[in-house]
Image (cartoon, rainbow, N blue to C red; front, side, top):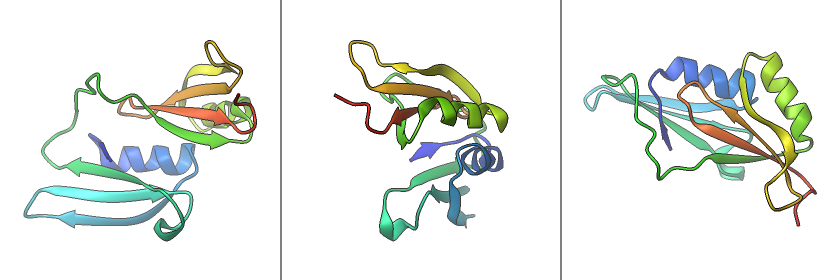
Length: 124
């Protein structure tokens, strides 16, 4: 689960830039929050990302406990090109990880969360 400051902006990023689908969304007026679930497949078939928007909060401190999300991709450089072409921000170009051979890259969502692309088949 990620807490996001502007739900529509975050949904647009995960949908239009990373290619996920909005699976479901529900408002909780008495609690003043909305939950939105995004994924590459139905929830019954794999992991999904829960975006939580607290209506009265438009920004969060990311803290130092959270690292990043990770998504396996066929080609990290191609994935970065696609993110950039769709208006997303690449913060680390595709290349081998430090002290290893796994090809990785990082992009950043509108709230500053990092998403790592791990290139399939390049791990030790």
